[in-house]
Length: 393
Image 1 (cartoon, one colour):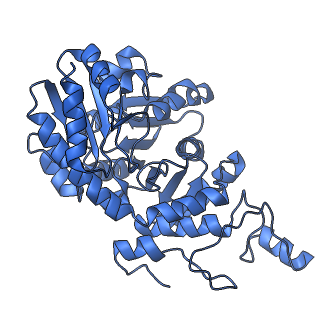
Image 2 (cartoon, helix red, strand yellow):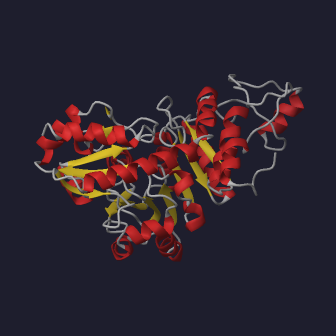
Image 3 (cartoon, one colour):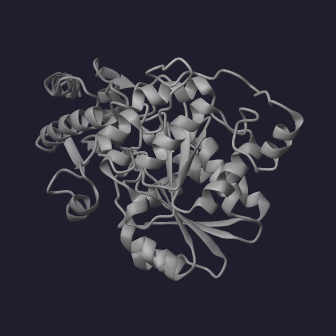
């Protein structure tokens, strides 16, 4: 079925699907490492790229390809590459686009391991990096060097909820001949489509909203230009960072309900954010759906919904925040986000612990920051859980 001109929900359900010999309604799991050739000439032609077909699952697989086609259509890209994990995607992004002597600019509050990978490992290969508040275009422009090859942002940032004007930073990047990559994990393609706003590459941790059920780990890169897709795929294959066919099957199953899940979680998050903003024990809150949010107008401009992620601080600082996290009963104290269940965690000691205290402070990741991933439970139950936990502080 041709779905490129269909609506988003139709793409969620049908994009990338294919019929097998038995007419299965769901693309089957091709749990195989290798594929047989009809003859030696066909094998040689496939390896030379002269004939379509699959060779070896590290290089491609029908189930994985089905997912990749779906992701490419959801983000309006030329193609997608699925990875064994989100960090497999980040590693391949860096390796494909940066070489010795190059420079990268990243959001200061970039996902902790994404930042640490660059500053702890890729710097040893002669790649320099600067991390700035990418919401400030002047700061980004001042950080650009003659050897800057990549600007890599998150919007909203994890976990500080800072937005970057994707269209504006794309224009700046392209004026300087620089590629722009956007980690769109916090929003998902249902809320925000960075390629349509001018980005060159979109990254997802499929573990989060796209799969949505906290039962697989995966990543993806989607690019606007097919040459970039080919370069990124080649890097994935060399790194051996390919997704497993069963992983792909699970993500295909999970993503079909993305819009329904994100709408419900975002609706819940709005109610929770309004509740927290009026609570006497909450010191501050950041949520794009609140009119008090500093970048509320930008959120309205480039995001379809404010999303499911909330950051807030509890009066009494870190000790009070720990009491809150130790006393919730419905919310799980766990890293990750974007599942059907509500999660709560402390970034400074968990997801961003690999950053120095100085770097965390510069990024706005204060010790009192609590990150809240709102699930699809009844909003009243989520708020009641927070209420009883806050009462214990």
